[in-house]
Image (cartoon, rainbow, N blue to C red):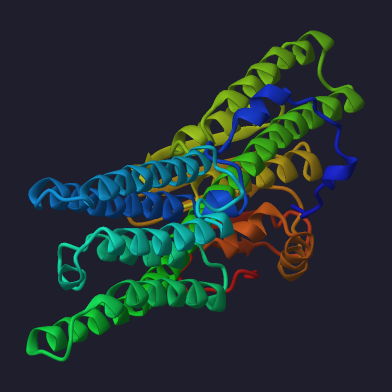
Length: 430
């Protein structure tokens, strides 16, 4: 039994239905690129900032409804309404970009400038409508509102210095709106000054924490999404390769055996004609099958043996196969057996062959024997390794094989495939 095998480029071509191939391994999901990779991070960012902004607007509404009525109440009310509209437009714009999987980030330079200008203006307007003694307390609701503006700036800034500059503007606007109106050097006034400076430092602190958090969020979710897309791509590629491999095997091995018998003129035309429907049905069944479905090795070997029994003297005994190890490359082992039978039928034509197998939940052993002239085991193993045959691939996947033969006439050749390939022995045995 020699290891000769026709290269795929020399094999008869087979027309594969494009729809069947295109449907296998298709990965649904958003378009590729930065928008897809960071979509989860952008969605969480928009939802978080929308909740924080809604909370500060609600706080402002509570302060207005619970405070004493005065000449500045109307001004503060109109200010709150304007800020609510501005925030709604900005968040709706960001949400629309996320929903459309836009390549642009939800918060950009326009959001940075808008939040800086709107926040600084809100601080100055509300300061003019609030008594000086109340500006450093919790009733000055523009301060927590603009702290959230600093967080939004952290999400919008692409570089550090524009964000720091914008936060510095908010800090300066806050101090400018609070400190000048405070009364003289009394104990209460000193407490208000201390509170004002403490509130002013919170802008930079919240900006730094938010900038670090958003970058960590994008990095983590981006890496996770990239890994998911890579895994999905590998799965899709494996499915496409499996489909092409099945189409090649059915379109190559069966017609090759048929054409070989036509060339030898040893079988009548009527018998050769009966092979065609079987090959066609096998091809369509393989193309329609799910490549991820588990393979029963005994059933697969039975189908392969049935194909070769029609054109050669083949005795099959698979009665000792009861189960198979979990995770074994059953399809690869079956294709290795197919290759051995193909060699036996082509290179040792006229001699009988035997296919025997035994299997348990722990190990599998398949043997293919023919009574033809012997081969040189080391040369045959070298040919398989050089041509990267299926038997060589089976060995790489964790299996093993042994060649029992000798380079003299009548020696016969036996190839034994085992999985797992953890049994010691020389694969080039005589």
